[in-house]
Length: 148
Length: 140
Image 1 (cartoon, chains in turn brown, orange):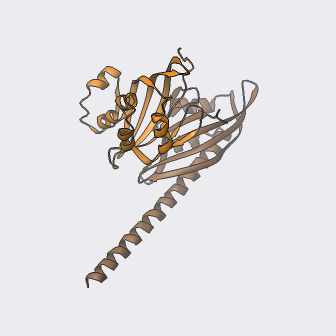
Image 2 (cartoon, rainbow over the protein chains, first blue to last red):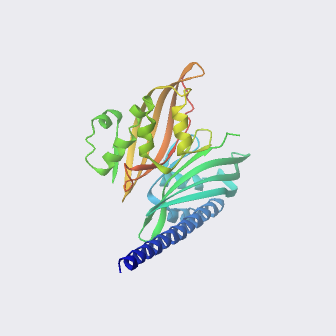
Image 3 (cartoon, helix red, strand yellow):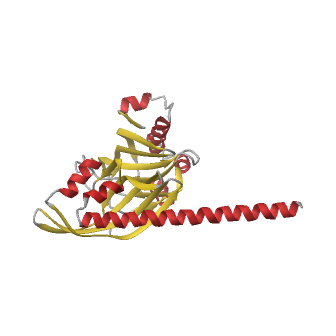
């Protein structure tokens, strides 16, 4: 009887772990999908879509070390002089911690700013929070990659 | 819930709320100055990642090795300003970190803006990440 109970407990623990791992993978996939949607929104300068992805308390640290709030970030995307032609993530990894997730990746953006073409590769870290069944980004930080 | 503290207030904070506890953990100055790898190792989660100023990515073990390296000799490391925002069990802090160190025999002062994410359900409020940004005004 005791052996049976132990076996049942092990089975239940294994099932719970499998369910947790599956759930984390599903949630991770959802967040990575939102990262792609973010890039599409940047390419299209779609601030309405970005508004949905970013939490009201969103904060960004730009590659020059400046910090911007959600409204400032959206204004920067909307600015006529910001003309990204391509925005893609070269690789991404994600860690899901229950109701938060941290995505690390490389963001490559091609565009024209003040008449000059540029290609930037930036290492980013985004923090996402799950609230009311949906994910929103609360913090984003980017560092220009100069390391070889 | 958001909390922001100037350096003087930060030093006197009673840390009697969650944001205060997080800000207390962020006070790594003694750990950096003393190069206390053991204390840092307890604060950082096994999944900790950091992005250095050149955009390179380091894992926890590499980060600790860098702190331990004889070439890293910080004489003083302080936060100029720090704020924390709580999202349930997750805290996001933003700050400017100023460190004085000797680089190739010359004294330098570096200012870095960073964002940290901390998960308070893990032992000692494990830190998930740290990011440094160069300040254009590097003072010799």
